[in-house]
Amino acid sequence: MAEITAASVKELRERTGAGMMDCKKALAETNGDMEAAIDWLRTKGLAAAAKKAGRTAAEGLVGVAVEGTRGAVVEVNSETDFVAKNEQFQDFVREVSKLALATDGDIDALKSAAYPGGGTVEQKLTDNIATIGENQSLRRTAVLEVAEGAVVSYVHNAAAPGMGKIGVLVALEGSAPADTLQQLGKQLAMHIAAANPLALDADELDAELLERERAIAAEKAKESGKPANIVEKMVDGAIAKFKKESALLSQLFVMDNKTPVSDVVAQCGKDCGQPVHLKAFKRFQLGEGIEKKQDDFAAEVAAASGVPQPVA
Image (tube, rainbow, N blue to C red):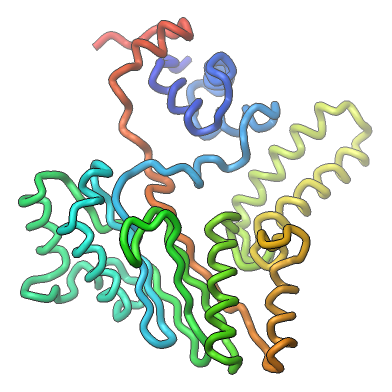
């Protein structure tokens, strides 16, 4: 059996919000497998769904830039929030966001792009690391474009214009007036920042993710003790609910919490007399999916939980 350390208990607790002893038990039940332990806690109703993806686990900034009907979003990481407030770091994020507009979302192309003043983006980043004295990385980028319409950007928790903790791009197609598209796009982007949809519609949801959700729902339903046919209906209902809540077009608009986003877009088209199509979106949250470095107070956690620490 794998050794359950205080550090792993602490990580699981941070990622799920479950109690310390529940986390310890989950790791014991799953032989120390972190992802399996998360699923185990969820089947017992002890963890929030998919909390990992929404957790900020690294410092730095997300930057956005829009030019015409094209928009780009980038994530640049740093070790501390202090560096994210540094003017030199912010200048870099601002310039890289603009350069990303020409790269089609290719991170390697962005790193090798010419940086204003000489050298490449990657070389400039290396120089910044040397002068600022802290490790930094250009992690990812994405680009959206429409033939006719608008790409609208939004930054949540802005540290400076065009950069913050969450960056969103919304691509709207159609010949509606520019101000109408901008207003709708901004509202949709704010919704996306808050609701964190996983796909545009249910058909685009990741098949592996759905299978994982189905397995969790099935385990929960079996514990109800109901007949197999009822359990199957419970699972189907749970998956239908998950799809509805995870796909942008079927989510309830945060502005009124009752109208599906698809209806909001359709109504905008009716009001202006021109069809409007929500083509795509991108949402970058700073640090999502990156594991945090463990802090040095694992001994304190161990003392509270009774979990032995490994001997160095």
